Image (cartoon, rainbow, N blue to C red; front, top):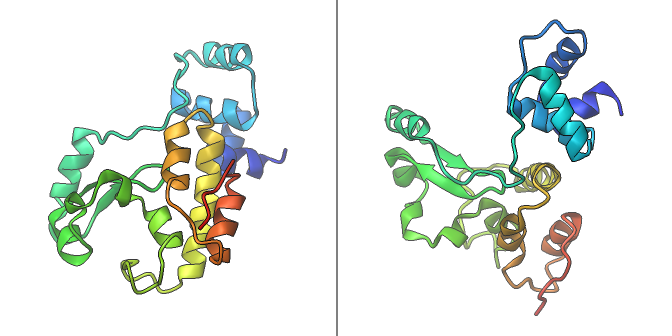
Length: 193
């Protein structure tokens, strides 16, 4: 793999990856090492050895976080003039501030399963049904969503909840874009109507 590809898969910049290779960067965090191990498809013993060499404890979870740190919640509250919200790697809206409620919607009124922006972008019966919050190019947004979700699925392959969120809604068989989206993510089975 090229350096750029490894860096993208590890969720770090190419420049930082080059500095790590050349031992010019500070000690990498456990998360960075876990990302590199996943990008390079290291086995568990190889990943453990990488962490041992770097002097860090290995990150033992293959699940992405769905909790929001108190410091992030406090940051959202300190942004009264900016609409802000926190999303998971699977595009679940996890937290939001008052201005986001005023400008977008009150996410608290939605069931947590209905707060997934990827599902809302692709699995709507018509574009007028659900707002996409001022997104000017829905096609480009959907392409970005697919790329981000593919990266999340590669980074957290054991996270079955992430797959269930995306595949739980029935999809109309005539909606070619939604079917292509789910196919691109590698859905095992689709419920079509």
